[in-house]
Length: 155
Length: 105
Image (tube, rainbow over all chains, first blue to last red):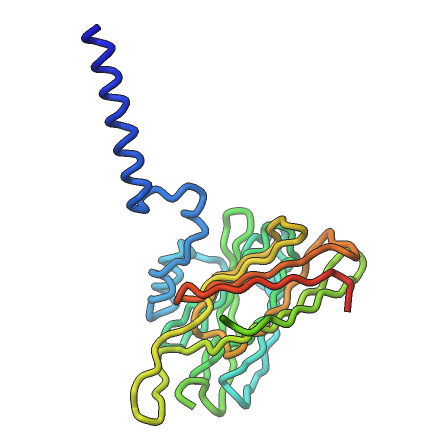
């Protein structure tokens, strides 16, 4: 009798703790990977942002094609096309190295989209545009220099 | 409430070529208004796209995306008449969803 009461109490305690953790947002079932990565977006260098995303040590690859203007007349709107020819590409991330916050975004193509994305970004000053592609748990990277004649910030 | 998105989804074989234009100021938090006050950060953070209710594309983006953002992506296994819905959420919690028919005009 005494024993079963203890078990019940113990069980109730554990469930309570779990619910509290859930409420506090410590355990976000399913959302953990999808959460907006504030650490990476707040990083001031590409290296720090890549580290925050777990992309440190990405290998240079020629199979990522970045189509962007060599010289962008208007840094506020720079069209960038990215195609990955790496099999099993799951996501495409973009870093504009000389922007105040280089990490520009990650595009998840693992759920049925082709490994292609078009975006338009603000580029503050002439800067390499670095792309990191995740494929099969590995990371690949390449960069293309874009020269900007009028900045995208503060203009 | 934000203005509607303009979405176009055209079919090329079984691939839907999707282009979307979102109406959003995408403030960087760096710009100052004429009175010299910094305009606070206000930008889209997440974008998701669903084909017939099934997620097909997602993006996390920063304030470095241009004002009134334009994106294009390609969705495999689409056919005419499929419903493509796109949702964005910004850093103030505002969100908007719009839907188009693939292959429609």
